[in-house]
Figure 1 (cartoon, one colour):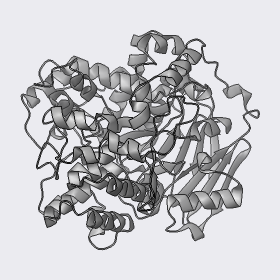
Figure 2: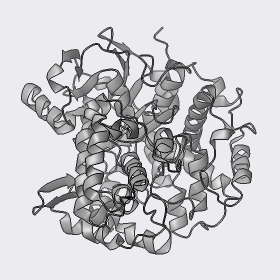
Figure 3: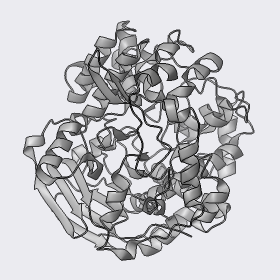
Figure 4: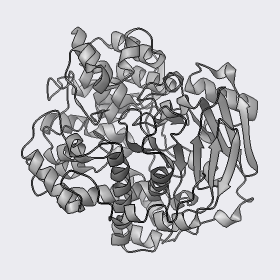
Length: 564
């Protein structure tokens, strides 16, 4: 099976040491990306670690496809113990980092410990340098990128960085790359902030480590690239916002902190409104699909990348705000300060609900900045809805501490089931049942009988994040093409995803999460019975725990080196 190559680079920021460890056996089993990082996290993060403690670790990992020039592969994975959910979380981001990371000659970057000083870490194919950067304290993400460009001649395509939100341990702080691309959900930006890591850069010429080269089958590599370049998909013009009006009219666009199911001003923040503000094409590394959304409003002096659909929901309909420029401004604030737009927007919506201030975009942006800096009420809101809802006097509309994505489980019942059982909570990318229900391939009504489909979707997405392939490449990177690319039967690829899900769940089980956490804050039909069907389909215990005899758990550690 095709897999990533290269050592694990472990950086202890407290000791200021860098150690390379060969992980060939692990990569052969786990391929790369999310699966490899999850296996490492399962073995090397103590089950009782504190998210903001020095024992927590953050992993940045690549898959084998990041050595290709194929569309839909300009992405990387991050994994760690989430300060938002208190369980393992993986998130991925696009941009232009992946090729520079590969050229540094490693497959996984691991950071552990805690620094006394704010650090920038520079990783090259010849070593690691630690740089104290006290002058970057409180700097925004673009300011940090400018510093790296001025002092090291490295642009944002070489960097991951945190903004003030990460430094201030906002529980939904993002790790940013290329200034506007976010490792968004779960708060890994705050994990780097707890370690006093402001920025990490990666560069190399690729020639210093030829042993990490991966040969990508062609075809289908160039076939996929050509089809992406010639597609007339609306996604290329409007990104994910292209479905806003359709979802609002036919399903549900959660509005005013979930008080309503439909937003009367959806046209003002939907795909056409975004396309009107788009002023050029945008893409990720090596991708001809170019679905990103560089937008600009000259009258109000705002320029950003996006907003995508999730941000349109979180800072638009959820706030009762129907002006796309207001949403663009909020999007830019989150990118600059380094925050997940979903959790940030939903948390601000909870505050607006408590103050009866829906529609007040100016207040929403003011509160967003206060959250990033933990000023005034922002200090309370920086903890996220699950921890601050009592103070606000609103419902705790989260799962496992994570704020909901836009796709409404109250209407899409399969998606609701997915939110309930997902190891990282109310995240729409974990299984993607929503796409089947929107398309009519799966009846959105009811939860019973959907467990097998949900398991397959979770396993597929876990492998997709392992390869790594963009979620929007599904029509092009088909099951048949995945088999060719990875030189394996599709069922074997799903097995890699299955083991990843099991390791995530087992880790969370050891931290006390079980069936009591696989719930929703609202009622949908037969949820308890559907969750039981899911456990049965997975082969798990009735209480939502993974049996110790499960293959992924029983084999853990056999291919994972220890750094004790």
